[in-house]
Image (cartoon, rainbow over all chains, first blue to last red; front, side, top):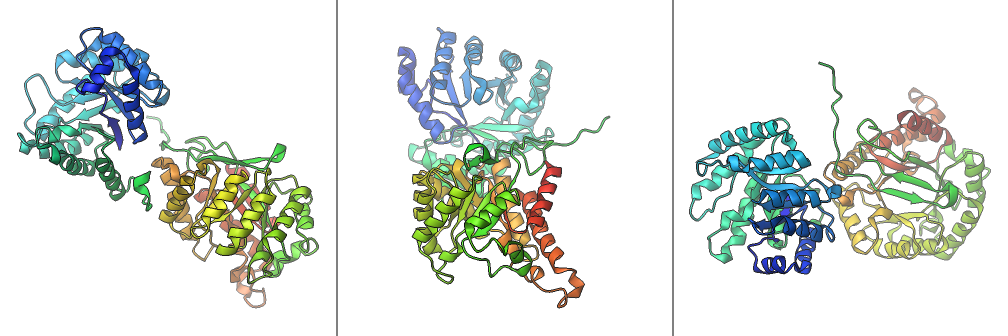
Length: 262
Length: 313
C-alpha cells in the first residue's frame, strides 16, 4: 500500500513555527523519520497559505527534497502556491501528488495543474452541494470527476479517488459507506481506479486513547476492499504493524518471521 | 484494430552481482522482468554456468560423468585448468567435499591451501562451496574466505544453522555469499533478512532456495524460485531481489536415471545421453524459473544449456 506521511502540517504547532521562521530543520527531520518509517510520499500541508504562499511552498519542497528521496503530496488550497510547489518538485523519485481537487468548480484549477505538470491528483468525491449521503452518491460524483479529469487531459491512472472519510463519533453510518465506496470506485474503470483516504478523519473527535485502535481497525477494512493509498502517521508503530500484517494476509507481502522489521 | 501485445510492468528489479576480478570477472542478475521476457524489460546479464570441480576424486559420481574427468580429477588444480583451457569454462565452482566428517574430514587449513593453489592457477571467477555440513562448513568457509581474500569469490552456503560466522567471514574478506534454505520460501526470505541485519549488503547476496533433479521434486524448486521472482519483481520485495543459484549437477548425478545402465533398463535409452539430457533439462527448467547462476558437471549438458541460453537472450 502507498503510504502518504501526514506529519508535516500547518496544524501542528512545531511545524507552523518552523514554517513561519523558515527553519528547515524540524521539517526535514519530520520528513526523514516518516520516510525511513516507510512513507512513499510526504504530505506537505501549508494550509490556505494566503500570504507568501508561493515562496513558502517552494521553500518547503526544496528543503524536504534536499533530505528525502521521495515524491511529495502537495496539500494546499492556494493554487498559485501549489503551482510553485510543482515547479520546484524534483520528479526523479516519482511524480508529485496534488491534494486535492473535488467536484466543486473552484477546485478544477487543480486538474488544470495536474495536466500541465503531469502530476497525480487526489479527487475528493464531494461537490459544492454538501456531503455525499452514501456510497452510490460518492460513485456518481466520482464518475463526474473522472469525466472532468479526461476533459482537462489528466490520465485516469494519475487520479486517486477519495471517498471522504467522516468521523465515526458523529456520522457512524458513513463509516461503512466509505468502505463500500472504495470497493465500488475500482469498478468504475479497467484498470481499476486508484483510491486514497485521509485515515485519521475516522477517529476525529473520539477520546484520544481510542484513536489508535479506531484507525487501525478501519484501515484493515479499507485495505481488504483494495485501498491503494492512505494519508496516515507512519510513525505510529502499532498502525504500521497492523498495515504490514494486513498486507501479509492479503498476499501483498511474502511472510517471513521478521516481516514487521522490514 | 491492430493487435497489441499485452505487457506486464514490474516495480522491482533483480540485483546485479559481480564476481571474480579483471577482464574475466562476471556479472549476473540486473533484470527487471521475468526470465527471458526481453519484450517486457531489460536483461543486462546472461545467466552463468560454472563447471563443478572437487578437492578429491569424484568417486561417488556416476561413471558417465566421472570418466570425463578421470585424467584430471586427481588434483583440483589440474582439474580446474582442464575446465579452463579445454572446456573454456567461464567460471569454476570448487566443492570442498573432502572436508566432510564422513568423507576425508580434511581440515580447514588444508581446504585453504587447495583454494590458494586453485586461485593461483586460474583467472576465471571462483565459487567456493563447503561440504554442506553445517558445523564443519562454519570453520572451512571461514578459512576459505580468508585464503581467497581479494579475489571477489562467491562463497557458500550460509544456512540457518551457521550463517553468522560465514557472513562475518564474507564481510571481512569482501566476498559474495550464497544464502541457502531448504525449499521454504518464507525461510529463504527470513535468512536474507537476518543476513542483511548483520550489516551484509544485500547486493552481495545470492539466494539458493535448494535445487532438485527432474523427477525428484523439480516442481517444488521451480515454484519456490518463481515465487521469489514474483515477490522481487511484482511486489518489489527488496529481500527477494538477489540473483538465484541453481546447484544442478549435485542433484542430477545422484538419481537412478543418470546411473542405471542400458542393460538394466533398456527402455530408458542409452545411459550417457540420458544423463546429459537429465542435467540439461533440469538446468533449463531452473533458468526458466529465474536462476542466474548454474553449477553443472557434464560438458555436453553445459554446451546444450549454453546454446539454449544463446537462443533465449
